[in-house]
Structure formats: C-alpha cells, structure tokens
Length: 158
Image (cartoon, rainbow, N blue to C red; front, side, top):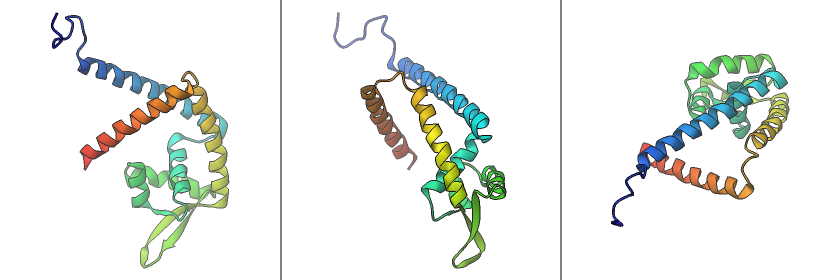
C-alpha cells in the first residue's frame, strides 16, 4: 500500500470538515435556544436585547447607533426598536455627541448596568452548564483552535 494515497475507505477531509460544521451549528443552535428560553423565563428579556446591553456594557462611554450596529453586525433597524424599549425601561439613555448636533449616542444607565450584570452572571452559569461535558483542558484547547480559525477567517475578509 502506498503511503501517498489514503485508504480506499478513508473519508475526504472536506467531508470531515462539513460534518464538523454541521455539528458546531447544531450545538450552537441548541445552546442558543436554551439561552433564549432562559432569558425569556427568568428576565422577561430576549437574546438580541442581551446582546445590545452587552455591547453597551463593553463601551461604557456610549456608541452612536451606527457604531452599535457595526459592533453587533446587524442593521440599524434591528437595533432601533431594542434601544427604544431599553430607554423606556430606564436601562439606556441617549446622550448628545460633541460637535454633532444631529447625532446622539446611547449608553447604559446605572440601572441598566445593574440589570445587565444580573443577566450576565446568569448567562455565564447557563453557558457553563451547557458546556459542562467538556473538561477544562478540552475547553481551553477548543477555544484556542476556534480563535485561530476565526483569525484566519477574519484575514480573508480584509
């Protein structure tokens, strides 16, 4: 048997990668469904709302709507309704942008920071439970491998 040829029953690497992608997608959808349900039942909230609050928590000085949309990689229209409800709930405020009378930025209020912190702690525990089947070494290894894959994919977009 030649060392240069795969065994006749060996699967092409493209099939193995396709299977990996499908499994990643299935796990992601399952975890996401659980997160959505937990946010709905425990906080009367949604995953998109959580994502907006997370972005604003990372950018405490505030973001213009276009910047927020860019951070979340969604359209302005997707974010506008969420921001309106967060403002109504007292979790977000609009602040003027220096040097641009027409523009405003949005940022979390102290009440919004407090609420996001509660939700983020629960979110972390839910993720921990969902991925508890992985031992710490596997988790670290997979995280590193996926970071490398993301970096190579991001390089292709440039």
